[in-house]
Image 1: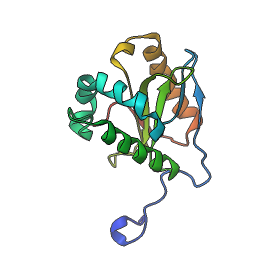
Image 2: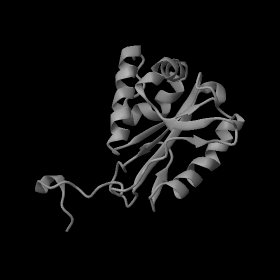
Image 3: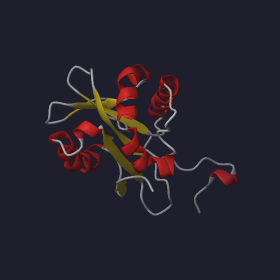
Amino acid sequence: MAPTEQDGEAPPPWLPPDFVHPTRVDLASGHHLRPITEGDTPIDYPAVMGSRERLWSIFGPVWGWPPTTMTFEQDRDDLIRHEREADAHQSFNYCILNDDETELLGCIYVDPPEHDDGRDAQICWWVVDDAVGSPLDRELESFVPRWIAEAWPFTAPRVGPPD
């Protein structure tokens, strides 16, 4: 029987200790991905709040995000948390950026599984309202599952909105 946190022992690591997460991934559309940082708050906040209603319909029931009253400072704190989690290999938030990183067009989340259902990761993403149905959105539909299969050590990821 595997140790659990209840036994006073840490659960097995989510990722292999020698795994190095990607730090930049180029997309065919000319966009790229990289781990989000606190410094992205000035472009993340308008992207999130500009698409808040749709994002709430996807993530609100499970994550309670993004709240209608989220402030710039709360978004910054959230990005600091994401940055720390990536550094600790606990979870990853990749921002989808234009070439010169002046516009954030969405995010991809690579997280540990939320349920004990045999899956080894939870993968989901969003794009800003203006990019829904765009070539970028269509590219992500095929790119994300392929990227996870090729660049990450998962054997049974769940790809789709959190539940």
